[in-house]
Length: 478
View 1: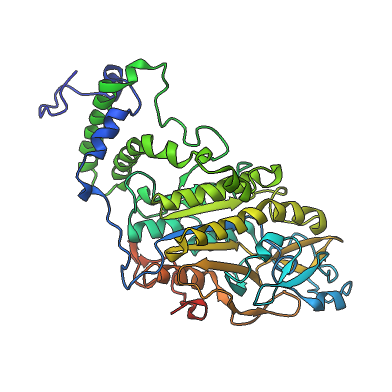
View 2: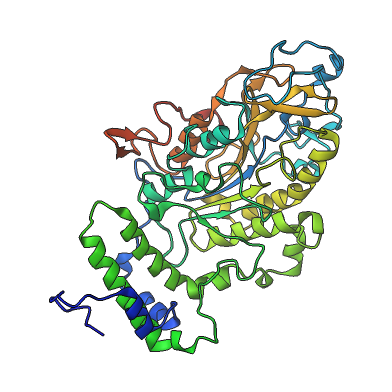
């Protein structure tokens, strides 16, 4: 085999022959070598890029499909009084799947909870017990009633594909907190990816090493091909180290000749991270290390809550170990098993609410009890709301006019309420909040001025909040 240090390139070196000589995979030898490297190679955490930060880590819980506000958090007695009346739009609005029907009251009981007396649906009994912790944005609004563009807007700040997502911007702006785990991890619903598929987790035009690392927590191992299989003895030990070193040299040589292409730098970084994760990932993803009582608190002992509870617990373990941004998704794209309740709100919404309620309350309580709320932010969100008018007789259609988001943890003035929808939860009424404002606020908490976090692309200084966004100081501690 030709030496990689050889300056004479008259004899070409092919990857196929290289791999045949060295074997494949990444081994512990390479890992030990990497862990012994100078710590200065780690992208240092920058807790105050533009100003002192209150948040270093974020967990985002995303309800795919459009969670119905008037059936969960936005109690509207007026819906009961007007139930059955045809007062909706006469023409089918853009993005609706059917003409607006009669006003439909919520089929679920509401009650006031906590010291704040916040109204909460009977579908969320566990969150009702911790309802004084979050701050609620009660008049969120969007630009589209279509799932794909609305999901892009919620994740990237734009309705079109090709733009970096929120987690990628955070990774780009602040770097990594750990050399052993990705900065941005996505835990999708095991039944499928959300609308837009991987587009919601994309780095867009940012360097590709900032894209979300997708982990299927429902399979074992959750990260495939991290270790070479035991039956491949040739891929172990010294051969593994030689392969890793050779591939890295090839990649670096290739990257040096194409400095404008970030994919090679990302490939090198991914290989180094994969080697480091050979020891860190199995421990981080081993939920058996948690006590039986902790697993039970997250609902892992029940079929209905096991999956989402497992991913919420995993999210807590990941941020403890240095992952900066974790997304936990509830529901895949499509017509079933998500929050897109067109057919029958009475039968479709309860199982979705049941699957997340206990795990969310457990996660919030766990983060608080462990002191993680000192620098961690928890967010509950969705891409839009539902109509107060029936679709058919028992369903609810898409509605970007108003929906609910809540935040809890570091820097958040718990128990606060900002904004109000109208009496039907059809449109916003006071203190309208856009996704741009939510992004600006979270970046502010992380020490970033959203107007200064930019990346030059096609002659434009792009940013997550586009040309919009204001920090919602009304829900912040200071």
